Structures are given as C-alpha cells and as structure tokens.
Length: 307
Ligand SMILES: Cc1ncc(C[n+]2csc(CCOP(=O)(O)OP(=O)(O)O)c2C)c(N)n1
Image (cartoon, rainbow, N blue to C red):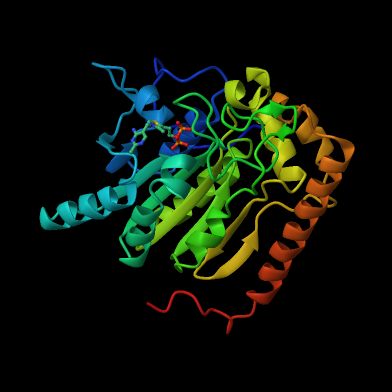
C-alpha cells in the first residue's frame, strides 16, 4: 500500500482515555493535523470529554473549552465573539460534538450558529448513538440497529425510525463549506479540513466514527469497517463548497451493503429482506448525491452562499 502523506504535526497526545479502535479518537487526531496551533476546541458532554481530560491531565495540545451538551453551537459563537473582542487573529474556533449533542440535544444551538454566520468549524463525530452514557439510541442511529434503548427480541427489532439526515439539515442553512469525512480515508479527511480552514464563516463536518463496543465489532476492524461504509455507499464522501457538490470518492460500482451489515453485532438480527431494503435506500441516496453533483456543477448554479 502507498505511504500516506499526512502532516507530521500531532496535537493529540497518547495517554488519552479512548477505547481501543475508537473512531472519534482518530477523528480528533486527523482534525488537529489539518488545523494550526492557534485552535480552540469546544467539547460538550460526550465520549470526548472523558477521552480528553481525565483530571488533572489533557490529551490535547490546543486550548479546550468544556461546554454543556446542548450548547456547542452557542459556545463557538461566543468564543468567536471573544476572540474578536480581544483582537486575536488567525484563531480557529472549533466545536467538536457527538451525534446526540448535535443532531438531537444541541440542534437549536447548531442552527443558531449557522444562521448567525459564525466564523467557526462545527464537527459532528457520528458514532450513531449516545455512547458515553451506555449506548442509547440517538436520532443518528440507523434504522434497525440494536441499542440499549432499542432492543431486539420478541416483536422488538432495533430502532424503528430512520437515521436523521444531518447534512440535509445543515445544508438547508447554506454553510460556506460542509463535508463528510471518514478516518479510513485520512488524506481526504485532512485535505478537507485544510480547505475548510482557509475559509471564513460557518463550516461543518460530518465524521463517520465507528464505536467498537457500541456497534459490536472487534477493535482492530475500525478502518476496515470505515472502508466498507464508504465503498458500499452507506457513508459517501463528498463536500459542498459554496453550494457546489463534489463527490470525493467514486470507486466504480458500490459494494453490497451486506458485508458492512454482517460485520457488526448491532445488526445481527437483520434478515435478507432487511438488507435488501437497506440496499435499495442506499442506492437511491447515492443516485441523489450524484444528481446533486451534476446539477450544481455549472458555474451559474451557485444559489447558496449569497449572504
Ligand atoms: C442536558 C443533558 N442531558 C443529558 C446529559 C447526559 N449525557 C452526558 S454525555 C451523553 C451522551 C452524549 O451522546 P453523543 O453526543 O452522541 O456523544 P457520545 O457519548 O456518543 O460521544 C449524555 C446523554 C447531559 N450531560 N446533559
């Protein structure tokens, strides 16, 4: 395999409290590789508060702000205002929150930050559940997945509802830049962060963040699972820059979703027809994404960033 070309800088240190194979830990490491040393990261209650700061230590080499779970968006608007009031230049303000703290509990706060056009980067690491408190379902948990609050047994068959479309919600606010990233594709990840860092205004990342204990797979499979997620179309990689879509990984035909599903205990109860339904849904979403890319490719089709 070709050697990865990634920045040497490390602003996340060893000695953190993440589980082995933690997707969110890889996400933070890659994010900080793409940002400069003048970065402030605001973290709400989530796995990452535990990972970063077992008292009296810290695993992060950047300024860190601990905020309430519902307030990440508001906190980064406030941190940006404070940096401006102090005349600090070249500071990256970053919110780094889980899917529960973003797509559910902190959604109003994220919406406010986007609507105010705050000059900051919001990162949602998506481990598809409230993992820090014991694997409860969130709005971002996929349909059918087992969690401790969506059991499997008798007539119960995991989460009945569909996964919330956080990119759709964010894109409706017309951010300057939004992208999906996956630690299994680290160069794509860091390149997008570097690109976002050059921009001013509200920016957003949706990060695929596998959780071995929550999804029930072996901790040495995080990267393999990430590759399967993207290459099957479960988690496509794309960016939306000033309203223009660009799919950043198109590896020919998509792999069947079955391999991804069968690799995780949380989907162990899936039948062939559950897999076929998921396959159809993923295919339709992939086609819609390719269509969005085609339709926004023309130079005149930039309806989004007119703020
Ligand atoms: C208002 C409020 N409700 C509930 C909690 C308890 N709580 C702390 S962390 C957490 C889970 C957060 O889930 P998510 O944002 O998905 O991040 P993850 O734990 O998966 O990293 C919850 C529910 C809290 N701290 N504040």
